[in-house]
Image (cartoon, rainbow, N blue to C red; front, side):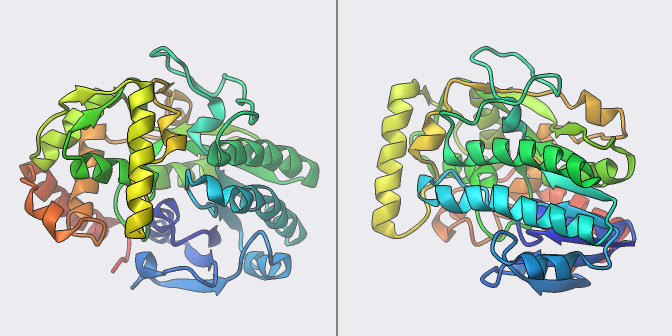
Amino acid sequence: MKALVTGANGLIGANLVRELLAQGAAVRALVRESSDLAALAGLDVEILRADVSRHPEAVGQAVAGCELVFHTAMHFSYDRRRANELLAAATHGTENLLRAAAAEGVRRVVLTSSSVVFGHSTNPVVLDESSPLASAEGEGAYVSAKIRQDALALELGKSLGLEVVAVCPTVSVGPHGTALGPSNGLIIAYLADPFRLTFPGGCNVVSTADVAVGHWLAATRGGPGQRYLLGSENLTWPALHALIAELAGVEPPQVELNHGLTYLAATAEELRARVAGRTPLSNREQAAMVGRYYWYSHAKAAAIGYRPRPARRALAEALSWLAMSPHVSRELRAGLRLHDEVYAARGWQANATGTRGKVA
């Protein structure tokens, strides 16, 4: 079986490629011309280059001969300056891919949506797939684009006679991310914060490896036109930051900021990043989400075989990889006193590599 993965060099895409190889699939990776392919180094994959939102003919060529299509291509960014790019990838890119899949006779397309399409709560309430899609109006650029993409994909897929299945990952942490996106970035942001700040609200944390398995399960066992939340544990931000602190061997949270102070702190971080010429570890769009609970249930996915690891292990594995990656500076690395579980995670990952497929 041959499978196409768009956005294959991204955090979820690169983990999905590894899962597909482990399942015995031949993998074709579609990436942009400018993409850094470090996350795919050493993997036995066919590489094609095109932008799904701008090159529909090339997308058609990428789909040709594939039995399954996984659409992960969309940059995960809360940078408002990229709003037009995000919306184009979410709408034009998704439409180009679905039309190409229908033209080439592909039966099933798995869309990487997001848990945020189901909204949030101001109270510690767990949401599931029975919740209606959130309104895109008034949301930040990324969240708005994902909501529009999800609705478009299922509606257009049905009209084209495609079996579109949407998987909706929560905050996904783990190895193989070429760029430091917001998910792994939340770990680095806490480690780099000299004040050890935390804030109200919470999120659901999941391993990228489990998200990859969830994609495969959706492709092989999921129902057409269905959505599946792929998460693990719901944690408050103080609990999550305390867990990161314990695993990294740094101080636990000292101060909980309210919404207003978080917004000011994010503004200061944006200014520091602009001066330093780097991507901010947090920004005002993320600060606007403080105080909300992005808590979700993965019970529906569990019914098709999804069994995610605990958040603690997911974070240990992410820290194991991040600590040795270019995303952690030498100065920051010197201040870490990694927990034994973080060192053990390297063994877990090595064992998984040996039993689940050929990886570099």
